[in-house]
Image (cartoon, rainbow, N blue to C red; front, side):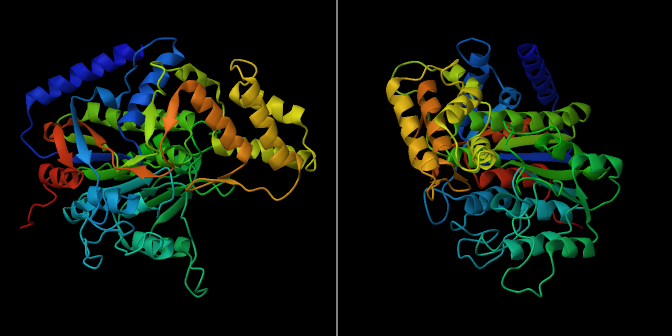
Length: 471
C-alpha cells in the first residue's frame, strides 16, 4: 500500500513539474529536520523495510519527491555548525558565527529572513517546531541575537514579529530570571494580539484569529513535544501543528510556513537510533499534511525539505556486512521514556528496586531476554550498572546528552540495542556531513545538485518573489 502511494506521488509530481509554471508559488512550505543528514533518512528507510522482514529500503513520502540535492553546512566560524548558525543560513541566506541568530558574520549586523521578507510582501507567515518556540532553528526566522541562549530576549522578538502562527512545545523561558519586573512572554504575546491556545483540541474548538500561538497543555511533562515513540493520544503532534498552521495561514495572497522536526536532533545527541528513526517517520507524516495541500494547489505550492546539520555521526553498519534493524523494533520507549520507567520504580518501591524488577522492565521495553538475545557479558554489564546506579541508592551520576540527563541504565540499554542492530555513533554532537535537500512543486527543479545551505533561502526568495521590490 505504501509503495503504491509512493509511486502515485512520483507520477503526479513529475506530471505537475513537466507542465511548467507561469507564476510564482503562493504557498511555500519549508521543512527543516534538525540533525537529519543522509544516514538519518536512509536508516529510517531500512528501519521501515526490516519491520516488514525485507532487505533494502522502504521509501518515505518525501524521499519520493522528484528533485533532490545536497547542501554544505559549515558556518562562518567553523566547519561544524551549530543550530543557530545553521538556522540563520537556512533562514537568511547568510553565514554567521556559531551561537548567533539572524546576524551577519560580524555578529552585529542584522540580516533579514525569508519569513520576514514574505511578510513584507503581504504573505501570512507561520513557524512550527517540535521543540520550544524560542529555540535556535525557529528563532532564526524572526530573531536577531548574538547568543542563542538569550531565550527571553528571543521570545520578546517573537511577540514583536507580527507572524500569524507559532506552534510548538512552549517557550524555553517564559520569564526573565534576572529581572522580575520583566513581563511574562505569555502576557507580551497577548498584548501583541496573539491568541494563546493550549492543545489541539482547544484549537479545533476555537481557531479563529489572525495571530495564534499553539502550545501544549499545562500538564505536559516537558516543554518540547514528546518523542513520537513516547507520545500519548492527548499529546500535541507535529502533524497537528502543520494542520493548524494551514488553517490559520491559508488566504488568497498566500503564505510562508517553516516547520522544524527538532527532536530528531535531540534523539541523535543521545545516540538513540530507534527514537531517531521514529522521529524521522513522524517528520514524514507532518510533510504528508503539507503534501495533501499541495495536491489541491499543485501549480501554486512549493515544498522544500532540508536539514541544518548532521548530529551524532550516525553509521549504518559495524563491519559485519549486514544490518539488524529489526532489533530496534523491540524498543518501545526513548532513552527519556525508560528513565521515567526507572524513576517510577524508584518512587513506587521507595528506592528499594530489585534486579528482578529492573530485568522485567528491560524485557518489556527493550525486548531483552525475550525477542532480543542478551549475552552473559551484556547481562553482567546491565547488572553492574543496576548495582552502581540503583541498588546502592547513592547519588547517581546521570548519563548526559545535550538536552537530557538520563538514568545510566537507560543509556546502557540503548547502547546495547544499537550494537545489536549494527548501528554506530561517532559523537554526541554535530558533524560536518551534507544536509539532504528534497523538493516538489512550483520551482522545485531549482533544488537539484550540490549547493550551500545559504543558497536554499535565496532560491526560495527568488522563486516566490519575496525579494521583489514593491512598487
